[in-house]
Amino acid sequence: MRSKIFSLIVIAGALLLFSCGNSKSSNENRNSLSANTILQQVDGTISLELKKADCYSDKKDPSLNTAEWSVKVLKSGRFNVWLSSATKDTTSLNYHSNVLVSVHDTRISGHPACDKIIRNSSDVSYPYFRADSFMGSLYIQDTGEYNIQVISEKILPENLRSSAFEENDMSKLLSVFFTPESR
Image 1 (cartoon, rainbow, N blue to C red):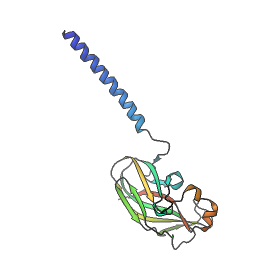
Image 2: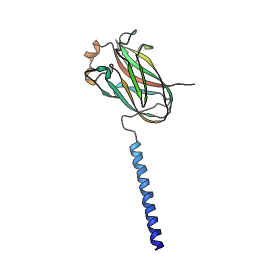
Image 3: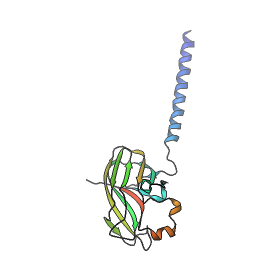
Image 4: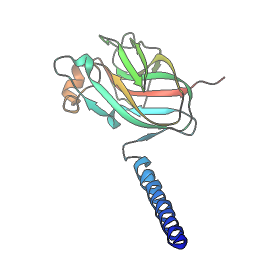
């Protein structure tokens, strides 16, 4: 009788151990990065190009147009948030409403200004200049995968990014980047 109970316990333990081993490998598969996940660079910078985002447009209210990226954060900390825009007018970006940047539960909202003008940037062609706008800073506490959203009327649907539309547009959003603050 004791040997039967002992045998059942050993078999149950072996099954439990085996099933736990299988669940770890399936968790690893679930945690593997999707093809569209953006990885944080070695220097800590997170660079998010609009052409790599999932974009959603609101025809009734373009100020609710949204770009979303899945990002793998490898180093947590405080980050400065910058927007890069293509513009013809280096004195005003002509954003009609605030831009909202959202990471997990943290949001930054601001009206982009021409804080840095980059001439001869490879990101844009004539007659555009690249203008970088400081939006603020935020703290990302933990490492892991995050969804980062940007909401702005300057996020254009793919079908409106044609050259005919660009001729009439004074500015458009190109990218968002997070640079780590140094102490």
